[in-house]
Amino acid sequence: MLKTLPKYRKHVVVRTRDPAILETCDVVLDVGGVYDHEKKRYDHHQRGFTETMNSVLGIDFHTKLSSAGLVYAHYGKEVIANLLKLYKNFVESVDAIDNGIQQFDGEPRYMLSSTLNSRISDLNPAWNDNTALPDNQFSKAMDVVKEEFEAKVNYLFNSWIPARELVVQAIGNESRCILVGKFWPLNRLGFPTKITSSN
Image (tube, rainbow, N blue to C red; front, side, top):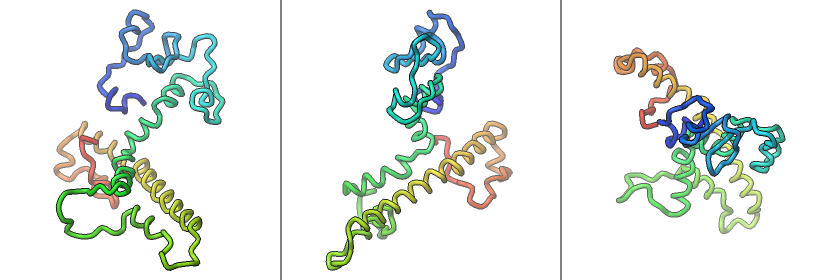
């Protein structure tokens, strides 16, 4: 999980139990007899270790954590957010529009009136509609956001990430296969085409 994060992507994994070597490591997993998030030490074998998701995060899971669970507890949101690029692909535009930040400088060439924010705004009761119930409209707005958020997560997780993995494998095996059109998934209907090395 940690290797998916930019700050750990280039770190070298060393398998050792030598305390002198462990002392030099930025992160230690599953050895060392210490759990200390501040020091980035995530072992669970030591006596007295009883941490669960409930004790670490306050959520209703009570299984004793392994090092995998400790890493997920402390880095899970960051890992998932990084993999799915949800802030860049979904939330940032909501932040910007809600704060009145323009997407670009200068005059727009056309109006974009079908954004998530505009659809939510359209659900506000009309000024002259005395029958509209604000709470009902708010509930509709929540449903719209929930549906779009879930659709974005589903697309990124079930389509974009698997497609990216295929492209990475193809580049590793035979980079010219994409350039000459021999990479078969690219011709499939709906295959994501905006997959770059920076992602």
